[in-house]
Length: 126
Image 1 (tube, rainbow, N blue to C red):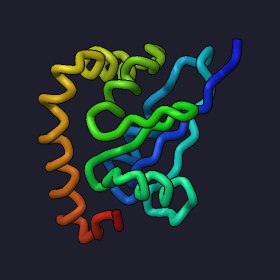
Image 2: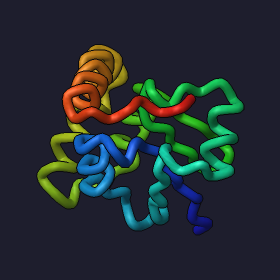
Image 3: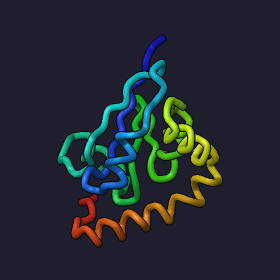
């Protein structure tokens, strides 16, 4: 079976984002998840920004050539995550529903913005 390449671009200075990506586990049979900080000036971050994707709106998941952004990222991660830990089981149950994900994502994004402001962190350059 050909394993796909999974790359997750996230805000490494957001404590919630950083903890989330450390806790999420994808099914081993699918492949490995590579984490990339959106604060790095990497070619991938530049490529995503050039596509018109605003990284301040959320994480981006790249599976081979397919791109998921905003609430789609959380939903896609829920669909491919393992159920090996309590966190992953709860995450999967909540976000496997596109409807729930779309409903919950805006308050989560607002919370991130508030948290970064409280911590004195700058928003990403997108």
